[in-house]
Length: 123
Image (cartoon, rainbow, N blue to C red; front, side):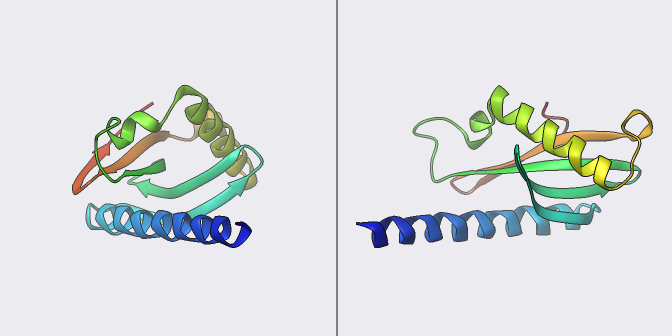
């Protein structure tokens, strides 16, 4: 039973890495610059941190196999948004960036089945 759970966790992690790579490649082709990936904080993880011209972009990558229970972007709940915002604040502080003078936004890259959506300024 324990082995099965570890396999399931490993598979989920691999799936997450796969779809983050798809998002990263797409966004790089759109001209964004990768600054960091999978930054862990007490509040949660920042999937992708990129730069779009002078704007820092914190990107949450979400995947759903199908839309039977809603689109992937619908899984970014208010609670999840708050955790991402807290993690982003900690990341900016660690980079010695002044939050008041730094332009930043939160995007979602959602993949539902074979459909991809890049939602700019999602929250």
